[in-house]
View (cartoon, helix red, strand yellow):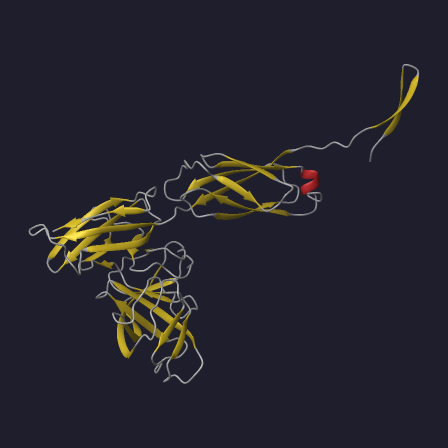
Length: 356
């Protein structure tokens, strides 16, 4: 309540009303770190708030603060919990959504920490014969464990980035693939599509696994059927996948197959969560052939391990992240070469060539 009182000044009587006290202060102080390297150095780091009653200040080292008038923003703090939703963003990093809780009776400012995740990069290079200097097609480039110090977490690079996010601890298992039928594209497929147009859909039903291959296996992806379009399965028509297709495929050069995935060996698990678009699996073991992630769930997906070089010797491993370095191995027949590579996250394309 405001208080009124009289003041006499130079023979005049004045009625004075005391104004209500308002305090603008920091209600939250935070620190963002780099998930891989720890310390941040990110010019352009900022905090995006969803509430107009609060303001924010951020610094390139990842420190930030959120301020406001506590009596207005949290009027019942003595008896009520409040939340602040905001997004941390910086060039080269994935946006990080944070929900901070202002607990009942909290002493302001509260403290918050959050780890920022780097945007993944593409590792691309060429495999060339050392003797002839000619490009080598069909070489397999895959990630391997550190040859000198076996790691506690194994990093497996896959041929196509993941279509779904997966939680830490979900099952991952190597599988063998058996072809049970062959289909044909009626229309080209473009990266990002979730629908195939086929000349016939015989043998398909919800849950069927379809493999799409082109470029002698350089491009190879799997889709899980969600539903079939109108018409009989033997008719030309559409097939809707649960996941999207990562790359583009032409009608003439593409093979479409119905496949079964059979488990091989013991089941492993993800050692860390995986994002949609990740091209690496951080898991309890290293994989050297086709893997199935979270089999039996709506997010189930199958991925080939490693990349193949094309007719010009070029290969690409997309979605590389979550680690400071990777160990790569290129092989073709008895020929083999290893390379240790410290990932340059400030470069969207990292070049790693092989000669053997």
